[in-house]
Length: 196
Image (tube, rainbow, N blue to C red; front, side, top):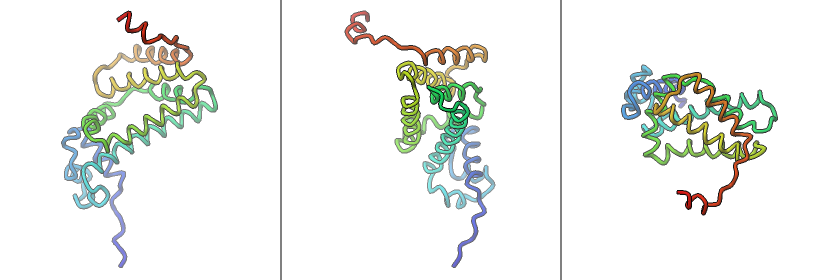
């Protein structure tokens, strides 16, 4: 017996899930809400995503894959340039966030924080990015400081904790770029605790 051909597009389901998350928040990202948004039955959503957690994980993985692809395209343009990974991250962060990007990130954040399985794709992405910065950097110290700075800037923006005016944000990106070439002086822990 041959099954019925698949007519539901997985990307359309994930688009609907992202729309629900952006509009209503992750707490309201239910299989029913996604089905309604996509104009399909709940059974169609269940076919690919057995539960809310599986659906959320798929949304997270798709967003990570899209961002990674964008960064890889930038790296290809840079060629074999030293510090390619961190330079690509800086160029990628030069774009302004859309309200949709911010809304989805903010709504998924609480779910990711409270669920180790949902955190895993994010942890894997960060481990890969750290390794990439280390592998392509002429001096790991400055590059890692730049990486931490750009991730901090991004976190503040994605979580809607602070939004820099565009000119100030551009200046910050340039200053973070400056960090890449710095060679920080190592301060012994004893000196840090004595001055505290």
